[in-house]
Length: 373
Image (cartoon, rainbow, N blue to C red):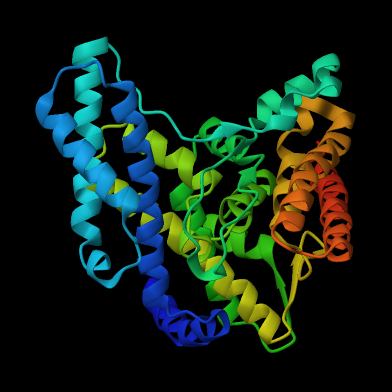
């Protein structure tokens, strides 16, 4: 199936690249730049935490690498030519830092650079046990950003809630997130290639055709993994799910090749989904998921539906309301960031209303979809 899909993908790439103003090759280079940036920030944190551990060779090499990349234009042509070499060096240094930490401190754990959402500790949440449990479950977080990617601007609200639940859901079900997401993204493209113009395409059918199973929670989990945020070549930085999986891999026994392969596979799955959605819109193909019209869905709808489904068992009838609360909290921060970026008050208000409503509608949809039969 992959040979047919590769041809299909190659035919679509020029149109998608033109629509986004960037070639597929440029997207890959931006993707690698984003990974280099994230690994370098992590390396900087490691240097700081291990400064009391004696290892002149590590400190000399790591500080030189960190300082050089921190000051460099990661998208400069000369540096782009060295991307693979730089990635290998960063991964080697991070592995060396784990060995040094184990020898010096008796433990070895690379940590993420994500920071907690500020609003998760407000008075209402402190006084409401259910709210506190909700935020603890979601573990909402924000990320440092400096690259622009294809969107040509630095995100002023690089914050997400729900990516931890996505990763934990796959772990609980003992299903590999990256493999499942990649296979499902190819299945969507295969079914799209067989759908007539202005025809209907049901996303659950694509999942069943690939996995021979009807599992709404896993389907929404896969959609959340590939459809809740774009690939790093689009945004210029690694987002929540990518970051969590990268940190897991950095703390594992995987070698450099395996770590990069997993990262690239997830990027491919997310890019496949963008191609799928863009092409469906272009040819007016009607997308549905268990009877729900999906063409108007954005990443907010995808994550809300997933949360409404996956957390139903833990929060029962309160789940849709808590999903909506998540949307309000996130979009309040987004509203402020839009104003700071120069977006008009009227446009910022409309975005806030539209996106919070997405959490309300889709959270309720996911909640009912995953009701016990």
